[in-house]
Length: 366
Image 1 (tube, helix red, strand yellow):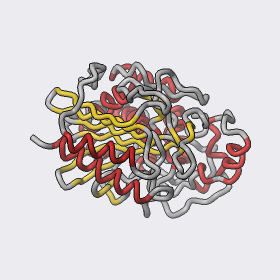
Image 2: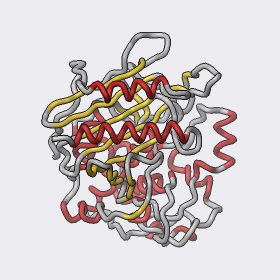
Image 3: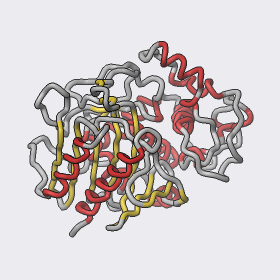
Image 4: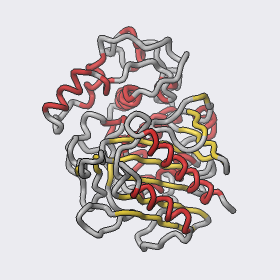
């Protein structure tokens, strides 16, 4: 059992760096910027909380460390935590293939290994780009998918490239990881999360729902597309269509607990961690601060001030970064309440990455 590390509390203690505070206020004021920002910076046993904007437009309530939110693709680190613990237990091997563990999936995919799924070199087609899936969501954004059949949307497609030969971020990868975990344990992925991640780390406000509702209180997520007024899309989509690739709901407080343990290697053995930290070129989605490289369900962000490990994520209404030092002693969670990536808001993404790098420099400062 892994003991839960210290985490951001609810005291409302604020950060004292005026430049950092002003930088997130500028994000809120930027064209297309988020209505709310919350950053939790933890180092030397102390927590600094930086907030700008509001948790819900039309109110004066500020974002809180205990507010629920969609954590988007940072959920992929959770599936990595599950799979790598199963590697430690000898139930999975990094070189186990889809053909061995999930023989019902298309034969064209059978050579893909768990390792390639975890570092996005599998070549699996991304099911979230399926015209059929997008048509279903357009007609009914709350449609309840069978999460274990999401790969059916691309089952007639070949691999995009020979496994292991290229890096290409694909949401299909972590669906397959979760299915592998279920296949070798006979347990549902949601139960594996509870047993191997939530309980050991004391994550009491983290879950993987199927529906579209969010536990209260929550950070409201918005579509911000000037000159149109911001639109609250917090519950516009259900989680069943993203599942292990991005469906988890959590809080800044719980994410702080998780990333300190995960980046610090507390959940897995040293030999497995050595395999996890074999880096190759590849950016998270959206790109994180500094120069990005990919490991197994984790990214390395090399900034002007030093290195942190973590993950980013996008979901309609939310953009996330969680990062920590390799020893897990210092951490940053950075959440904004609108969707920002290289395709929809490239200039805002560049500004966001710059601000995140400033926060990491503050994190690493002695």
